[in-house]
Image (cartoon, rainbow, N blue to C red; front, side, top):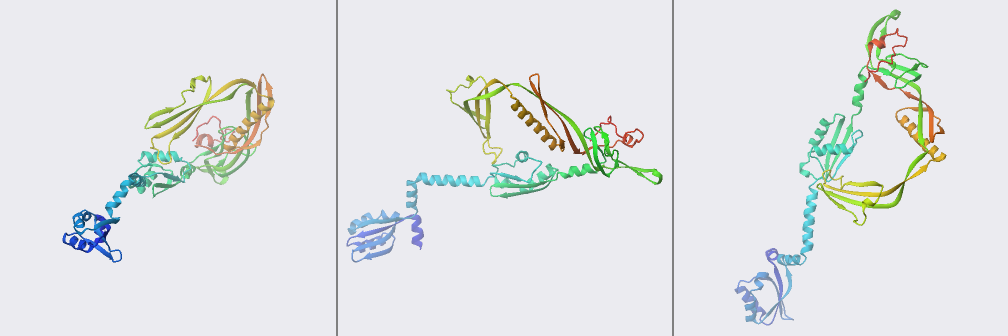
Length: 423
């Protein structure tokens, strides 16, 4: 066992000794302090096999000459010979060493931040916030303080009620919940009156809290009080006992008519692409810009062109601090030619614009009751107009004006278009 372990580090050889003096060879080796082990003698071939340390092999020449034998190396084993083989494949083992170092370096860094659960805050804004607090892709894993990140985010964002920060491998996983209803709940507690947003007719009114100032069928103007937040408590004989401020609650639907008008010139300039394009490539590293383009394509030969730029930061999902950017700019030649809209083209385009207008109204909470578009041609233009009838549940509030809303003798139930103060 000692020979096996020590021999591997020092290096040993399996040799074959031919000749009649092989036995004398063994005795002389012992006398000279040369260690031989696993000695085996083959009587049929008159050959001696044994193992010897590499450093002792070079001492055998005078002994072999005296015994008239010839030692022949059959096998090489041990660490020195492994190094020799590695030297022959230096590039291969160097590549393995470099790869191992790079792998260790990458494993010790953060290469991605995952954010889930946000709705009001965008992922980009949260990543910029983390970057400003030295939490970014490329930072050392040992510097990541999950509890510190969690506490910082909860203190910095009042609308974030819950945050979870977890480190898995080389990536930070952040999950959060936003408390967007907190501010709305606070608003609901403040006394205020419900007022109109548009001029129109009251279709229906249901009061849950406060004093109704209008009835179904009444015509109202913008900013008129629908449900007053000044609640009057009366006793026997309609005697006013107490006034209290509340936040008006109820459902009031107003129907209004809005006039829509759009105009489209018959003559216009049509932009057409000729198909000729030129490209310019830009690589930016550490604020140093390098441009690549074909010098045979002179960009100034185009009289008019559209410039389309594509690209951005390389690998932004890994780190916002990655200092490399790539851009490609396409210069597409265009010609403007005079053209005229046909009746069908004008109608199609005006209907498309009208549809976009109606969709915007729906997004604002309006329900379209009727909308018929009329198109006429006059003075070289196509004119579209419509009376759009729509309904909307009112949700605009205004702080309470006790004098105007409490006055029942002005003939307008406290409504006054001149009062425009609001919250």
